[in-house]
Image (cartoon, rainbow, N blue to C red; front, side, top):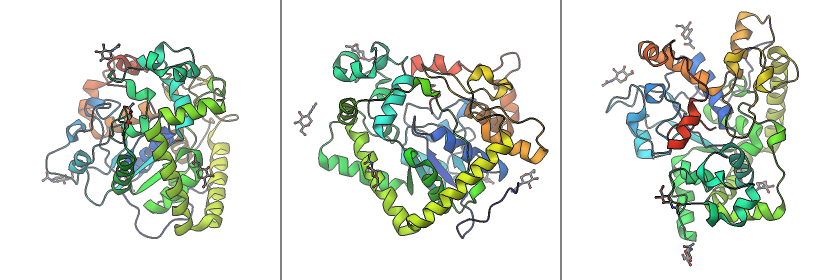
Length: 379
Ligand SMILES: *[C@@H]1O[C@H](CO)[C@@H](O)[C@H](O)[C@H]1NC(C)=O
Ligand SMILES: *[C@@H]1O[C@H](CO)[C@@H](O)[C@H](O)[C@H]1NC(C)=O
Ligand SMILES: *[C@@H]1O[C@H](CO)[C@@H](O)[C@H](O)[C@H]1NC(C)=O
Ligand SMILES: *[C@@H]1O[C@H](CO)[C@@H](O)[C@H](O)[C@H]1NC(C)=O
Ligand SMILES: *[C@@H]1O[C@H](CO)[C@@H](O)[C@H](O)[C@H]1NC(C)=O
């Protein structure tokens, strides 16, 4: 199969990008897209210091949490995409002013169902038998001052830098939305992932192949639970800020499609993207697609297992040629492994000291971090 599709917005590809990786919103898949683009274009990533998995999260982002950052230089880095709690002034110390800022949001109803399963070990959720029980009496389980409380309330607002416990007036909610709109060039939606990737490719002037992906860090279906109407309503009012964010940017998302390309062309582009994904899946993947960890032949492609969910991975088809083999492998490499490999490329000497062979990186390192709230590897 050919590697390059022609469909691409006019203009040189944008190569300075900030991605705010909001938790539990398909953001690991977007991160893989950025990793691949940056790696093939020889771009430089703003990576967490000492090979960590996040940029100081859940504390506010500081320029100093980027490996190799030098004060006063905003031309060292192209892409920043690890978990951070957004703080624009600090990001601006690292990235040039022409940088493209984007993020991806998820309906809070789906997001909370997912975070309840994933962050079951966190204090707000640990004593609740079910999400329904948690929502029926949040005060019994939820401690607003606990350092990991944001996993259970307004997680998106928190990642964007706002007070997740804030009792905002309508005016303040408007200001929050305005602030996000001014700081970010594009807000995507995980419920409309393919449309989002088309918008992204157009905005960045990247080609179609750059934004084709296989879903990463997704859960096995058996850990998903359907929610009742009344549970959904409780989630909306409990996550009032996130609900306001999602509703607002769901509106602007469709407006943007209407004024930029129209629904018809969007549909055509989505079809092309889906065809290309199917074609790549046939070329790259063994069997029907994602598999549970014990069925992975190559353990180096095993995703981090976390919380109550089973996180799926992929088996590559054997016998791929060099070019396709490299592309396919990149598409299925989980974020921790990919991030480490980029760190090794950019900081070979330091990486040798950090990732000592005597202490092979343990995939459940992240679990230990959770109790301190500092190292959470979430998605
Ligand atoms: C990236 O670097 C490699 C190795 O130096 C080189 O072969 C390749 O052409 C470069 N790619 C781009 C897009 O500059
Ligand atoms: C800033 O970073 C760029 C890219 O690494 C480098 O070429 C340049 O010399 C640096 N400038 C200063 C003032 O350190
Ligand atoms: C809530 O969390 C804070 C900070 O961890 C702690 O000091 C306090 O004792 C907790 N309150 C309750 C009722 O558990
Ligand atoms: C939130 O603020 C409103 C007024 O702006 C007030 O009436 C309400 O009691 C507050 N709620 C909480 C839980 O503090
Ligand atoms: C998002 O927008 C679409 C299209 O206008 C609409 O059908 C859908 O109900 C909206 N979703 C939410 C959660 O508001």
